[in-house]
Image 1 (cartoon, helix red, strand yellow):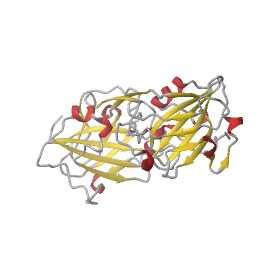
Image 2 (tube, helix red, strand yellow):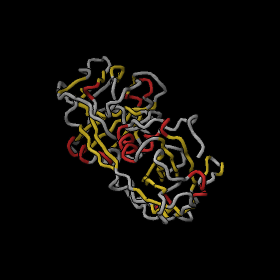
Image 3 (cartoon, one colour):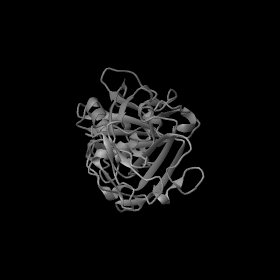
Length: 335
């Protein structure tokens, strides 16, 4: 497979479509942020969630230097255990060749966001036709360039092969499941049945130990994240890379309930609002737009109790899990 070092392939962006992953961020209980006196609502590392995760990707041993049959017929659930229609929902199959990494090392680096672009020294893909759930290895190409499978897919201790099955065709986005394939001398198997994604990802999140952010029920709501230095995985943050803000309301739910079902953070929300950004370190929540209706955000007052959440997102970062995910305290003087 030809090398792909000149393409901005950010490997961890495969994973959320999956979920926020890994790392531990020390947090302090209490209430923080602005007191609603008209100044900015300042966010800090103490306001951030912490998440821990691990991957257990199955392996299929195959004959080396062979034009394999690769099928995703059994991919009926994704990493979040949500249903997948194999024929309709899998748009792209990619094969990555990873240099000088064992399978456990690949899993660990994926889970911690430490897999570097330099680790990927080969990439080929196949755009599915939605009329079959199988393809030949020889049908994968490097953006149209045909690959000599017999010379490229060989047994070696220096390289690991990873199949990624995704919704959408943008490299690195929308993975539903993964499978290692291992060319092994003496093995005659020439068929790969990709495993379903459910059960491959183990994930926990902590939303209860963070410092809640105090916000007024009525505006102004200018949030400022220039003091954020680490994301939820403990990785360094470039504040100006944040390109959207997410507000969510969860009627009748507790923080503990949201935390226990973190995979469905967006699905469980009663309402969601988005702020699109083009740089900077601040955002006005009054410009947030509700998903589904297009209505502008009108405030944190609700007739029924529930939990308000705020997320800072970066679509171009190595890990697209929220840079910050926090709980809002909308009670006047609460803390």
